[in-house]
Image (cartoon, rainbow, N blue to C red):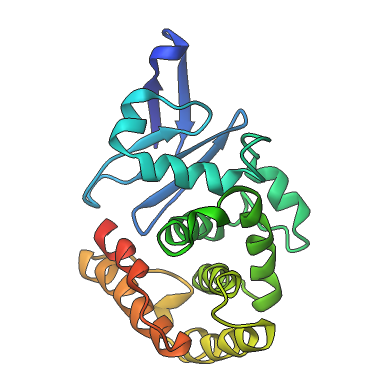
Amino acid sequence: MDLVETTDGERGRRGTIKIEAIFLGWGVALERGRIARMLGRGHGRFDLIFFSRKDARFAEKNPRLLQCGEVLVSRNREEGLWNLREWSEERESGVGGSDWRTMVCASAAAELVLLLAPEETMGADLFPLVAAAGRHLPEAIDPVAFLAGFAFSCLDREGFGGEEKLSGIAARFRERVIGTGPAGWTRFRLATSAARREIPRAVHRLVESVAERRWKSFAVLEEMI
């Protein structure tokens, strides 16, 4: 799918962004060092945001989405945008453009962190949380596991459990969600609208069961389907 968007600041310059994939209504594309996120047509909304500049129209309409994008791609506020390709190269697993499901899941995780974490965890404090996800779930190939590990790291940062407790949560999550979950977990078959709605609901229930804590933030996924 090709999508063309012209911004006021570019005065006629057109950027063509190739949407590489749509997963749970989210899309991520990388081109010329810019990152855009799209909520796909047919999933309730359609938003396209250039994180390389704060367009007034988008900023006013979707401040949380803009903030989420900045958090996801920045080491801290001063350094500005941080290309996700750079992040993928630093990870030994090579997670990046070749694993679009994980990248989209990272975007969803950033959205959850905005709802879950206090303001002071934004910016510089968020990068260690991303790194910690790999420590809690080192074999997190499944994007749902990556999302869980990322959010569990945020819980750890907020004082909801130390390294040992979070490791136990991650182990239970692997056992209950990845090990015994429905066959569709690793393939994410989104053939029907009912299947798309059921995935976030199931994730919500299962994560709450292993974290032993209400997790209202997961409702955002269901709202976006």
